[in-house]
Amino acid sequence: MNVSDYMTDTVITANLRDGLRQTFYRMRERGVRHMPVLDDQEKLAGIISDRDLRRPNWVDDEENIAHYYLLDNQAKVEGAMTRPVMVVNPDDPLSKALDLFVEHRFGAIPVVDGDGRLVGIISAFDVLRAFASPQEG
Image 1 (cartoon, rainbow, N blue to C red):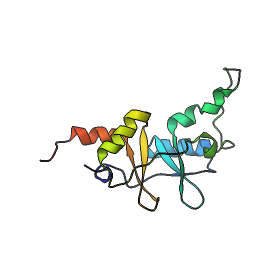
Image 2: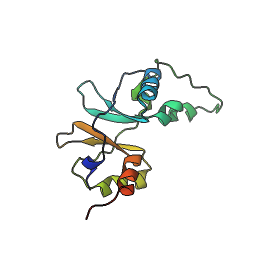
Image 3: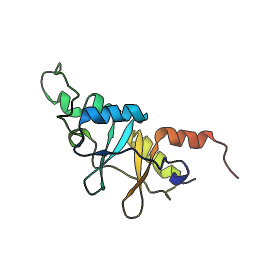
Image 4: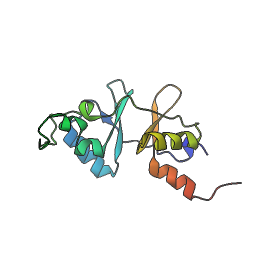
């Protein structure tokens, strides 16, 4: 089993300069919890999750723990995304993605081709689905 057998190849992406509010609503409309983030040259720059949008890590950096976080478009994806981002290739064995999910507790991993272009995304749910389906052989 390879990553390509279970990845989603229609990927909803964000741009570094997208506002957090618009990104949150786009995720909700499309029913996704993770979006790879592309720079202006369409290169993978990071990944953002719905968890990153609900309460980014930088919100709690202040001493006042009651600090409110306003989800607006003034804050940009670049400031809330995770980077550097770990990736897998379509031809990688599914076990490689599984190891990354377990070790790093990721929810999704971008899939890139040999040139580093984004070609898909694989989620922890996709891996669970792979192991729940009947095995060949």
